[in-house]
Image (cartoon, rainbow, N blue to C red):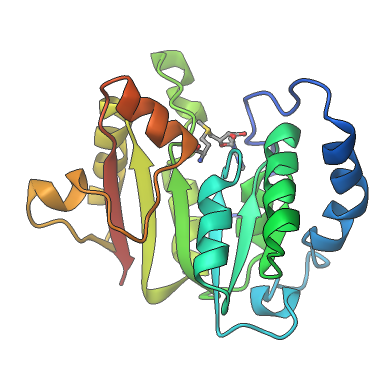
Length: 232
Ligand SMILES: C[S@@+](CC[C@H](N)C(=O)[O-])C[C@H]1O[C@@H](n2cnc3c(N)ncnc32)[C@H](O)[C@@H]1O
């Protein structure tokens, strides 16, 4: 598949900074983050994700927009043999994940604290074994729909990096975004939606903990949809 190279453009539209960090979080950002940060290869080279870890794991998973990192830290703790890469440009969210990494002594997490599109572009073809996009920013206004992370260009990049037979997991509590994603996926020949009956997307699997946004949605009476797509 040929991926069109578009001019370098940022795809981060929300805020990237919140309140002042506590001294502990600031220290983790200054000292731990540089050790875990993904180093981007030169443009002519592809990023081989397994090589970011020592020892090299058999599998690597990628989470886009991890927020406070609750889901990422849970997956890392449950799957110590898998290398997890998280992308999140919001500094306070990154700092929160660093606290979990430090407290739980997680050695299998790497961080790209910027736009996920950079890493999708850089990653080697068929190098990721599972990809998560959980409660992406909904951008509810029609004129902002073009900011939504799910679009055909990003799906091309996701299809490039996911290994055949591997899974893209998507969650949203915004019915319009769920329908939007299904509509985008229905146009593709490289993914299959796994659901056969409503309970398949209404029920959250046990190995898929609710994220902070997922829990908030449940409290507020908006049960999330959990969509799973397999790369053909
Ligand atoms: C609504 S929050 C959800 C956070 C988390 N996944 C959860 O469910 O609790 C969406 C997150 O996506 C991040 N985000 C937005 N655009 C992004 C991009 N281009 N690359 C990586 N993360 C992005 C935002 O900073 C934000 O933290």
